[in-house]
Image: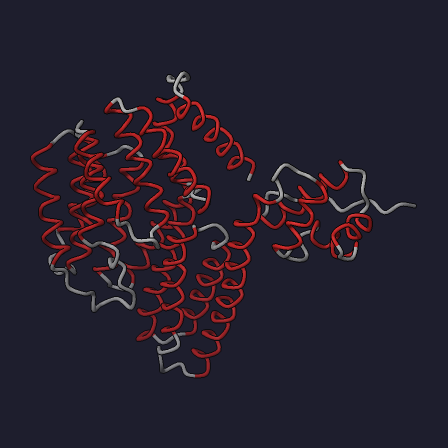
Amino acid sequence: MAQVPRRLTPHRSVLHGFGAVLRQWRECRGLSQRALGRLVHVSGDLIGKVEKAERWPSARLVESCEAALQTGGELLRFLPDLERERRLTVLDHRSAGSADGLLRGVMDHPEEIDPLLPWHEQLVALATAGNRIGYAGMASTAHAQISAAATVGRRSSSTDRREVLIAQALWAEFLSWIDEQSDAAEADAWLRRAQQHAVAANAPVLASYVLMRQSQRALERFDPRRAAVLARQALDEVRLPGRIRALLLVRQAQAYAMGGDQSACVASIDKAQRVASSADGDSELPVDVGAHCDPVYVAAHEAQCRLLLGQPAAAADLYEQLLQNWPAQWRVDEALWRSVLSTAYVSSGNVERAATEAAKALALAAGTSSARALRWLNPTAVALRQQPAVPEAAAFVLAYRQATLEACNH
C-alpha cells in the first residue's frame, strides 16, 4: 500500500511554506522526490525532508530546484526570507539556552542577580535585529524568556524579585512589538502586563515608558484623546530620563496634531528636540529603552505631525531630507516613514512620486515581514487605485494587492 504523504502546514513558517511550494511544483511536473533529487544532485530523502520542513535548503539547492522545475522565480523568492528565518532560529536556540542557563545560575547563586545581565543583552540584540530584519520568528524566543522569568521570580529572594519583575516587564513590552505586527489585542494585553510588572517592581521610569507605548497604541487606533491622557500621566513623573521624556513629548505632539492643534503640537515637538539633543542616560533600568529617541527620530515624527496638520509639502520635504542619510539598521522604521512619505506625495498631487516611494516602502515591508508597514501603506494604495492611467500607480496597486494576499495567507 502506498504511503500517504504527510499533510504540510505552509503557514507555520517560511520553511514550511517553501516545503509546501516545492512539493506542489514537483508534483505539478510529474516528478517523484527521487527523480527531482537526481536532477539537482541530492538524495530523494533530502528532498522529502525539505518538503516536510525537517531540513533547511541551501541557497544552491533552492537555485537548482528552480532551474529544474521552472517555477517562474517562485522558489527563488523564498531565499531572503529563508535566510532570515534560519538566522532567527539559531538566535532562538541560543536564547532558549540562555534562559536555561539563567535558571541554573539563579538556583546555584540565589544571592546574586548577575545572571540577568546576559538576559538583558539578548533582549537588546533581538530588538536591534528586529528593526533591521523584522520581528517574524521572534515570538517563541520572547515567550520562552518570559516563562523563564516567571520561574526565576518564584525562586528569587524578595530583594532580587524587583529585578526579575523588571525583566518580565521588558520582555512583555518587547512581545507587544512582535504582536503589533498581526494581533493588536494581544499587543495591548502584553503592554498591560508590562505595566503591571513595572508597577509591582516600583520602577516608575519603566512604568512611564510603558505608558508611552500605550499612548502610541492609542494613536494607532486614532484615539488622540486617550493618547494625550496617557502621555500626560507619564510626564507627571518628575524624575524621567531625557530620552523617555522626549518620547512622551513626541506622543503628545502627535495627539495634538491628530486633534488639529498646531501651536500645541509645535511646542511639544520643540521641547522633544531640546530634550533629545541633550538627553541623559537611564540609570534605573538595565536596558536603555529610550536609546532610539535621538533628534532624527523626533524629526521623523515632526514630519508625520506636519502631514496630520494638513501640510503635505512640508512633510515630504522633511522626510526627503531625513531619508537621504537614514541609518541602515533601521529598516522597519524606514518602511514606515517611506509609507507616510508616499501619503504626503499623494496629498500634494504628485502621483508618480507617491507610487515610487510606496514601492520602496513595500519592498522594505516585504523584506522585514512588517505587517505594520503594510497597514501604513493602505491610504496610499486606496488613493492610487483612482489613478489607473499612471503606470507607476497601477504597478504599485498590483504589487500591494499581492503582498497583502500573501500576508493574509501567512
